[in-house]
Image 1 (cartoon, helix red, strand yellow):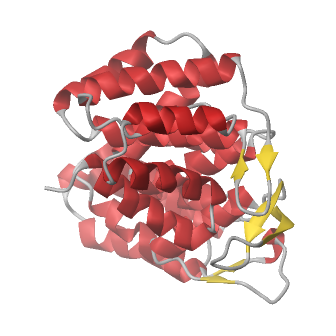
Image 2 (cartoon, helix red, strand yellow):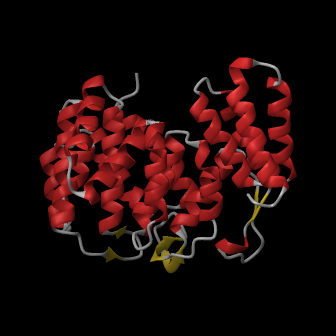
Image 3 (cartoon, helix red, strand yellow):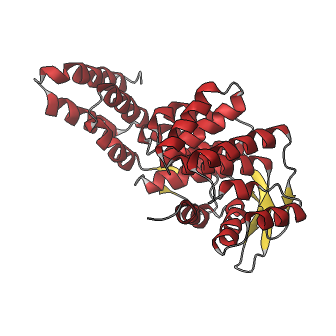
Length: 316
């Protein structure tokens, strides 16, 4: 069975290759150090020597249980909020307060997957936390853990202006919990114009250039493509110029209509309507036809008819 370090490395590597997240390269270097047997105290000392907080050690502490590691990460989140890391950048590394918080939240979610006690610890922290910023990060962690119940919270965080890297983390968490009901909101996020100015590597040697990066729209694009939504990216396009194939978006939501929870299905009907277009209308008509005459599905077909009527009259 793969260790939490191996699984984190695999997941981080995928996102790193996809969106060129420089913050991940910092985390992966810490993983490599631990994987090669370096004592955590030495990793901590190295971090301090660079002027970094040793959050990498908390994130990848193989000598701790799942719940203990989450407690360390939780304390690190609170400390980072109390004493924010100042931006440090050069042509190799780019480390920033929001990126650290996002990776700590990622680590909490990853650690919760290790054991039931970790999941319980995360849920208990969320239930008792009163600081809204910390609660947001714990909800992001729960999304990384794979809990779809927080998807509306994640959408709300993703829409909050002013914290682009936290918003990016929320979008990534939507993917990790497979919250496809958020497809319409992710499509809308393609228009997001909030940027982060950072060094982006241009070669394997670490050389880079300073560039404005659309982190929120970039992550939204990545998640949509992973789910099979086709997005046309014209040359030199700004995020607001992306063209979404609505047929593929409606198709990506189709499976949500088969859910055993009727409330979930009603949300899926609304999500397909928000995507809009001929394919969405056709999908809802097919849904109604397949369930016609089934008394157990009467409320669902009524909902689909209501939504379809709004779409056809232009009130949707």
